[in-house]
Amino acid sequence: MRRLGWQAYLGLGLGLCTAYYLVPATVSKLVVWPLIGGSSAAAIMLGARWHRPASRLAWYLFAAGQLSFVIGDWLYVVRVRVIESGPVFPSVVDLFYLAFYPILVAGLLLLIRRSNPGRDLASLADASIIVIGLGLLSWVFLISPYIWRAGLTPGERLVSIAYPLGDVLVLAVAARLAIGVSNRPATWWLLTGSIVPLLFGDAMFVFLQVSNAWGTWQHQQLLDLCWILFYVGFGTAALHPSMVSLSEPTPVTVRLTRGRLLLLASACLLPSAILAIQAGRGRESMPTVIALAAGSAALFLLALLRMRGLAGELATQQERELTGQRVLRVAEFERTRLAAELHDGPVQRLTALLYNLEVARLHLKAGELHDADGLLSVLETDLSVDIESLRRLMSQLRPPVLDELGMASALTSHGGAFQDASGVACTVNADAATQLTNEQETVLYRVTQEALSNVAKHARASRVSVLLASDNGLTRLQIRDDGVGFDAATTSTAELVEHGHFGLAGMRERVEMVGGRLLIDSGSGRGTTIAVELTVDPALQAASRQG
Image 1 (cartoon, rainbow, N blue to C red):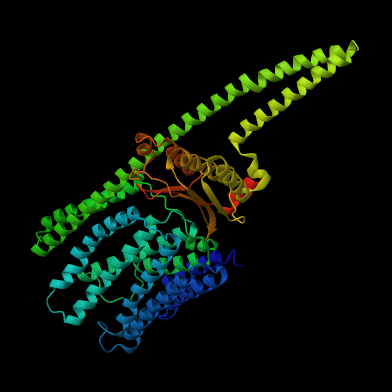
Image 2 (cartoon, rainbow, N blue to C red):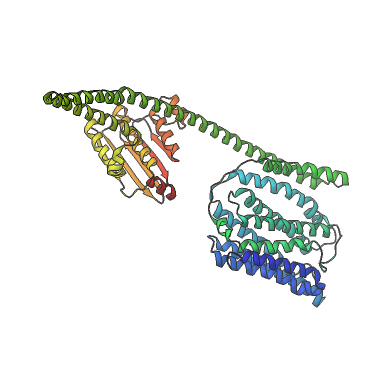
């Protein structure tokens, strides 16, 4: 039932929609219409209880907003069709209608915060461009006429303006949800597809009221279909199983696609189009011109902000490409070096061993046991040398000590060997419970080797400490010495290479290849601290261990 509940409700919604347009007007307004809205609120509550998303409060707010909207509709119909007395506008009915907007916005903001908890300035700028462009449309054609219309009381004027302002507020948050979320399951399409007819229906209703083209809401108008789609769409979204994934954090991947660029360009051109329309109608009043000028300035500044972000992304991409090329060159150099060492060392010696084994076999056939024994003794010594050579080459790929002792013991062992060889006091404090992938262990071990080698060669330090610890999914390696230090103003890999810090540049490239971050803190006379921060996906960790 939980898998098919959304389909059942969708069928129910279509049935109620059909009944709304077939039964008499009074029955449709007093019975069918409240059933459509009430069933939507019930479906949202049921979906939240069934699927238990991380942000259930957001869905409860959606249900509360639906109920507020339904109550407003029902009270309006009762006032118009049953009581037929008293003021219809403004009245207590408007309190329920207007309460719907902040409740809906609060729920949408909770979803955005859960799915995208970080800073996403690009999506925020894009959403702002869309909202300002469409907001100017609302200001000129829906809000401004009520501001300057004669014969309205202050209460009527404020309530009339509050409705389109509420739609603009919903549009702002919905635009942020629409373009700032990379995870777009079926529920996302249902939600956004429900908000669009809501905003269109509200805007057309206000426009028709402004134009005096429509009286009170008493008949089954075709425009009512917009609000029916909103009700049914939200209820279906809540019952769909994918509603859980909409509350899960997802990485931000902002791409300026052709469709997105066309949407932004259209929003930026709206002020000019509105001004042309108003000029053609002879209604280019000073407040309208001021509003369009301010909107155009805001759109221009947002476009500049967006261009700045794109320029930064392009520079970052170019630096990554250069780093990737350097990594490929280093890897090719390493492969060539290893191939040369294998050819000039173990391969040639093993070939000689094979020849000497053949000679030993001939000695054995001839009964020359003394000569054969001497030759085998020489072969045994040569074979030990070759095995040690191969082990050395293997350790350059992944140190065997990591597999034999584990990461913590390997660091402790290397720190002791470093202290014995250099005379620099070295303390190692490594958490044995630290869990990393094989690749990350190798990188941290190599970074420690390189950092301690730099201490021995350049730091003139008396003490060095190595710390490896994990906390809340973050693993941190820190190597700190009390040596002479250096100017650590350079940050990028290119700057490190330019200033001759090739070892540090190699460390940074290694760390970034496994998704980590290298931090360098140093200064003249205050030593140097090298820190590496890594996070590991449990699935990748398990796959690495199995491999």
